[in-house]
Image (cartoon, rainbow, N blue to C red; front, side, top):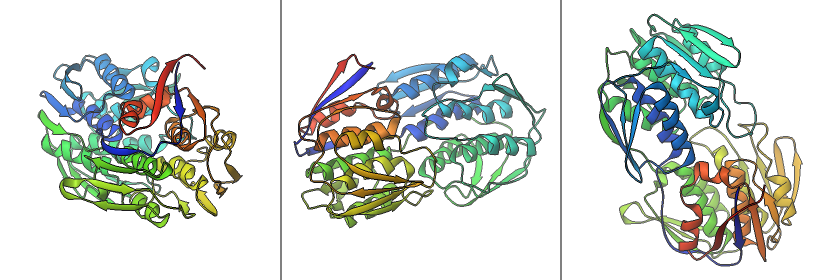
Length: 421
């Protein structure tokens, strides 16, 4: 397995371009199943998760064609299978997003229960209850979801808890359902809005994307399209933190400040200077004494759970006592003991971690446990005195395109090496 070797202490300086959003691209690629024509996508990040979902689609009969480093053309005209097998789905939870499109197009689907990052229980029961209400017969058998429906029917779906994947899955299925589907309690994330954008470009009738209530009027068929994926807001937030934790000055290109408003507000509370320049540039100056912060993760547009680990790393080198509360997942503090190995003073109390600021991290050998935890360890390594070894960075490769190269271009001392568990 690859690992990162980081020598900390260099302030990051220069420009960095944000890649396309992984969390937007994955459902968008799955939505191609609904189409009767060729679908071309640009600004698709070159990531392991993208490769995995393309393999899942290929298993179903979609023909993927890579037309550039960040562009894909999918040919979904001849779907030959309704089964997404365990060997592929186990690698990535987002594979469950083929369930709704398969049901809508073929009337049947067999999808392995998903795998992915070990950050707590992320049940798909809300997806399945919604499909059952739309007329599908659902069976859980031998680790698979087996679903059948002669024709999905539009209905009223109420999500009591916010579910991004559930909203996306139902929205895709509803596009080809008979009648009108109303989703109440819909997720508002930019990735959901982006999926609605590509579906609309394919001919879907969707109102209320980005709001708590969405209305989808089913249509008989969807066409092919060409669509550009939005930039990755979590990568944007990660580089904002990287500038702060190294006391650097970074210009972020290709990001959207409007998608990370809650993150920017907290970072400015900590003392960072952040401004939006011409052409959508985001300028961040981290040359300040960091103030403590109190953060609670909540669904969009609040502070994202996917930025919790990164801001915790930053708060570790702030002056004073901070607190970080995780309200979305129950097992997303696995980076805490690794940050402690690097000198952090952290006290985990249920869903909250109390942070006592230190002057600087100390280099150490640490192990990544999930995607965003990996990012927090890299950030700590950029700040640390001495040498940091971050193992199991395959987690990072699932969600950050060329992170080591981008950091190196900003002046960081980061190298990728083979070996290590």
